[in-house]
Image 1 (spheres, rainbow, N blue to C red):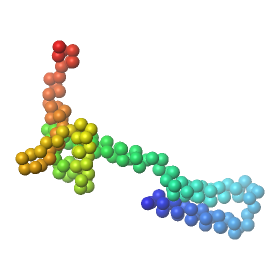
Image 2 (spheres, rainbow, N blue to C red):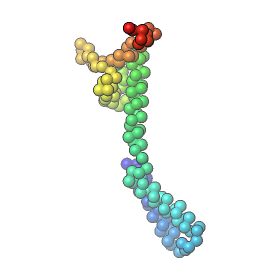
Image 3 (cartoon, rainbow, N blue to C red):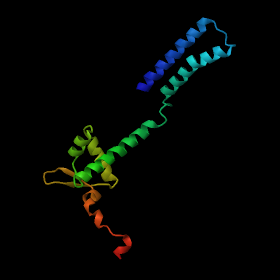
Image 4 (tube, rainbow, N blue to C red):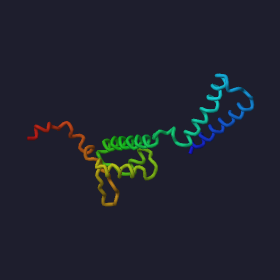
Length: 149
């Protein structure tokens, strides 16, 4: 929405500048007049059209969403390591200050990608478990794969 307003404002500025330029009666034969017309009319009009068409975004909204998802996933994993590999939706939402439902959506997506498992308590609370985070303390006991034979 803001890009549409910005685009409309830039087009209005370009139209206003073109009107002013036309009223001066300046000749387009000089390089100075052409440069002034380009800077004051063509550039704002071009950027205004680009904003209205969405060309200034360049797919950044998709990239921004993906970066946000990756950041939330990383923060969830850090929280899981601090909590012994078990988290609830409430812990994630409150610790990461996520809007209602976004914590659950992020956790459910991690379950779908098999980064977490889902368990339920006797009282019906969903607990998201992270296998590697639960067994992080065992990492110093790791052996080489060839040693297992």
